[in-house]
Structures are given as C-alpha cells and as structure tokens.
Amino acid sequence: MSEELLETPAPAHDDARASRRSFLKNTALSALAASALAACTGKTAAASSPAQKGSGSTTDASGGTMAAHPAPVTAAAAAEDMDRMHEAGIKAFPAKTAGKGNQLLAPRLVGGVKEYQLTCTKTQWEVSPGRMVEAWTYNECVPGPQIRVREGDRVRVIVKNDLSESTAVHFHGLELPNDQDGVPFITQPPIKPGASHTYEFTVPEGNYGSHMYHSHHNAAKQVGLGLLGAFIVEPRNPKPIERADIDYTMVLNDGLHGYTLNGKGFPATEPIVAKLGQKVRLRFMNEGMMIHPMHLHGMHMTVIAKDGWDQPAPWKCDTLNIAPGERWDVIVNCNNPGTWAFHCHILPHAESDHGMFGMVTALIVQK
Ligand SMILES: [Cu+2]
Image (cartoon, rainbow, N blue to C red; front, top):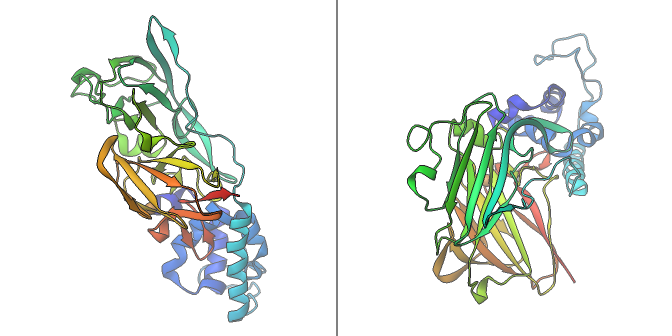
C-alpha cells in the first residue's frame, strides 16, 4: 500500500488531507483513504464532498493558517458524504479505461511450430479511470497477451527486450528442459537491453492447465510492473466437468500498480457476464506477492484443478485463497440471477472509507 501511495497523484493527497481533518478523524485510515480516493471515486468523490470546500494549498496539516476553517460536519452529513463516495464508485462500474490485457495472441505457424513474438516495452497504463502508471509490458498490455496452446504442441517464443534492464521469461507451471526455464545465471544469460532470445519447447503430454509466463529477472519489480501473462495449455481430451460456456482468466497482482484484477483496479475491472444456467470456468492466477482469498457472493465455486493438476475429486467453496504463484481452476454453475459482488476478502485490498477499489468485480447472471 505504501508503494501505491507513492504513485498517487498529488491532488489526491491534498484531498485526503482535507478529508482527514474534517471527515475521517481517524489517522489509521488515512493511508487507505488516499489511495482509494485516487483509485476509486476520483473527481466525483472530491467534488461531492462538502468537507473539501474551503480547503486547499493555503492550509497545512497543523491547521494553523489564516485560511477559513472548514465548516463543522455533523455525523449525519459525514455518513451521507461517505455513502455518496461509495455510490459513485459502484455507479462508475465498469468504468472505461484505455488498454485491455490478456487478449489471445494468435501464433504464426512456422513448419508446424506455433511461434509467438513478445516485445518487452515500457508504457503508460491506465489502472483505473484517470490513474496512469508506468508499466513494463509484453506487447504493451497488462497482463501480457494470452498464449493458448495444446499439450504436445511445439512452441517457439521470441522475446525482444526493449527495456532499460535485462530480463528473462520463465514459463511458470510448464515442465520443460532445463535450458528453457528462463532463470538468468542458472539456465541462461539474461536478455540484455536491445537483445532478443528465443525459447523453444514441446509442451509435455499431461502438462495441461492454467499456467503463466513472467519475468524471472529482478522479478519483484518487473512482474510488479506488468511483465506477466497467462499461458494456458488445453488438454487433448477435456473432461466433462471442465466443459463451460465461458472460460475466464483472472490474473491477480498487488505490485506497484496497486491491487488489480487483469491489470485494472475497481471500478475499471471487468464484470463477468453469464446467462442463467450457463457454466463459467474461472482460472485464478496470482502474479502478486500476497495471498488473495477470492470470495464470490450468491453461488459456490467447484474447484477442479490446482496449478493445472486435476483435483482428486471436485470440491466446493465460496472463498478460495490464491497464494502467490498459484493457479486454481473452478466452475461456477450460474443458477442464481443477479449482480453478485466478487472480491478479495482481505478487505483492505477491496474497500476503504471512500468506497470499493482494487480487487473487486462482479459476476452478472442475466435471466
Ligand atoms: Cu487480496
């Protein structure tokens, strides 16, 4: 959270300070409030708050200036104020932002090999409405493009490094020959700035499921900034339980961009939309550094695979903890119509006094 605060634009800090004095009166909550204001309700929240009036650059944290003091706020007005901010965030969902990650990357077929080109570049990324952050990306999106192959496929991935640091790509979950594992100074030299490197391998039989690719060099920074993507291996013979109408990948991250689902924070996260009676397969992937217990309202999830491996028997839950590096596959039988909240249940990853932000989305079941 502190890193996210450093990324927060200055006006949000000003808003938060004014808000802290006259509205929250709770210093422990101020850090959350600052980031949430930037991430969630933005201008709407600031403009709608009577507590902001009369405050500005002429005041400081001590309050000891010649500027007019803000009018006292009654408890009822403060409650109304808070509700307005929460409502504004919800009403904005799903908010439009530039850029969409995790889009399927079509391979070039070269002599029976599926060839993919990934270019590592620095770009600006809109995490939530109006909040631009520096991102290090594969092909200019966060998450990087989705690679989707079948077990037994021959795959070639050509990585061009246009970053200012060396990098390398690890195929997380794939059981590859050692020299394709993507770990600098263990299995290969780093890919220097300006250089390219080609990975080539056959996806082992039985190694199907939800996997990932990401940087394995200075990774706390590089993966935190967006060098990550989904690598999905389809089985040759899908089992009846995994037949679904909608196949949705949800990549979780908690690095320098804050708490995100597929590279976006609420209200810019994408709702999952299904029709009543449809089955949704969710592929959770945690590219972050914290655990995220994802909780779905209204319907349970049936867990079918962990890290790509079939579960001995499917099991049910409504809250599934996704630890760093883990992938979990679940099926949701959409038998309960409505808009259902779907969020990380470590609540500071999802909500503050200023409303919901970060790891929140919705499963919408249409009648
Ligand atoms: Cu979380």
